[in-house]
Length: 277
Ligand code: PXL
Image (cartoon, rainbow, N blue to C red; front, side, top):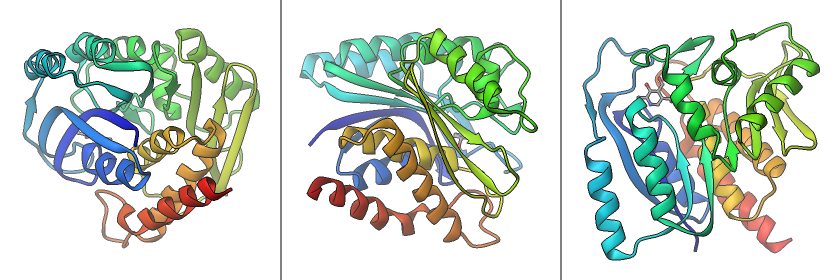
């Protein structure tokens, strides 16, 4: 069994980040270790207030223990992290890597044209350094624009714009780019996966608007599925199906996240079918 380290916050309540990655990556049949970037009482998207404990000082201490104990990973998957954590994370990605370890970077920092509360305007520049070492970068349209130092364009764009965005992120260093939240038509929503040569689009019908935590469910499923041998385009299609199933299972008043739990059997089923094929 492959072993992945996810580096992102533990929001105690809110169905995002580590509390999504652990069950989703496990459902993919991949061992999931966690290095919390911060502990929050709840996520920052829609709650009135939150506590925030930045765990940066723990990172080099944990890294040193892992070195002593010979701990190493087949993959790293980063999500919501703090500005001063980019260097400690790059260090862990090098000291705790098995040969050929993959790096999945979800630059979880913004949505709907805006940075999340708590991130300064300079943060995308720091995040761009992590995206630059990614084997797979998984930004939404807002994050992608901010990483490129551009104003987010969220509607009325065409394929040429998507091409500009994914090629820009590839030029930053990301080997594969999975751009999420792409839509050319008001009835559909999907992703564009670019491997440095071709762009593969995947669309699903647009469901009720429900964004909290969907990026985290998408990225965790994508990372687990690639670790199980799916191509980037296949993993993006599975991740989108899982997000849709999670949204469909989410009650109208469950605003802070999506009920991904009901979609876990879908992940197990689809990945076992792949194995049999
Ligand atoms: O789901 C993204 C996310 C992760 N972690 C924290 C957040 C958010 C989005 O708001 O606030 C702490």
